[in-house]
Structure formats: C-alpha cells, structure tokens
Length: 140
Image (cartoon, rainbow, N blue to C red; front, top):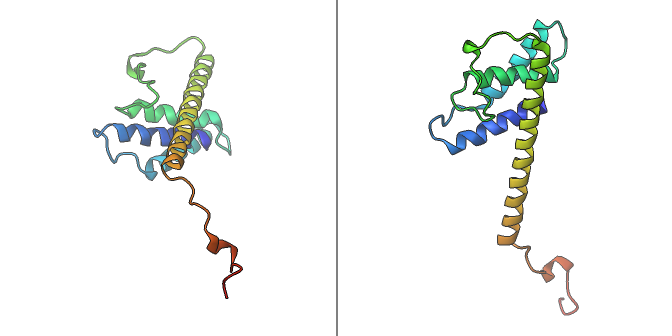
C-alpha cells in the first residue's frame, strides 16, 4: 500500500513539472494500481497482495507511461527475450523499484521539511498577547 502510494505521489509530482501529461494522474490511477496489484495476487493464487504484486502494478504502469517517473523505461518489453532465471531477474527488478521509490520518498520528505522551515521563517509565531492570560490587575 505504501509502495503504491509513493509511486502515485511521485507520478503526481512528475506530472506537475511537465504540462504534456497534465491532469492525467488522478485518484483513479491509484485505484488502478491497487486493482492491478490485487489482480496479480489472485493470478498467483494469493488472498492478499504482497510487495511483489505492487511492483508488478508499478511495472505495468511504467511500461505504458510515456513519462516514467522511475526512469525504468530503458527496457523495451517487446524487444526483449526471456532470461535463463526469470525469478532472479524479477527479484533484482523488484529491489530496484523499491530502492528508487524509497529514494524518492526521502527526497519528497526532505522537500516538505524545507518548505515547512521556509514557511516558519516567513511567518514567525505571533508575539505574546496579554488577552490570553485573562483580566489584568487594572482590569475591572
């Protein structure tokens, strides 16, 4: 769930930088990612979607996307051949996806923290207001 949410956030952030695909990333994309992961889990005879299923959903989205935020699109599925050990190759690809999404999550968190620090600098706390203490000694 966190993996798909991170990918969705990354896709939205990448969309904000380019006007070519503006408006393409909606909540329906996140719902589609979840459904793809669940469908893959059912295909593999599992009742619960795993991290592997989430990675497959991300790979499907990356394969169809013209603007890949993870930049995994250097691999063309139509021009490839099957390897000798597909399970090992998928594990490597899964590790790559998870690592890139973790890097992006850390970068997004860092940017949010910088924005908060910047906004606190621009809008400092208000000075002490005597009205917060109740009536003063000369108030009657």
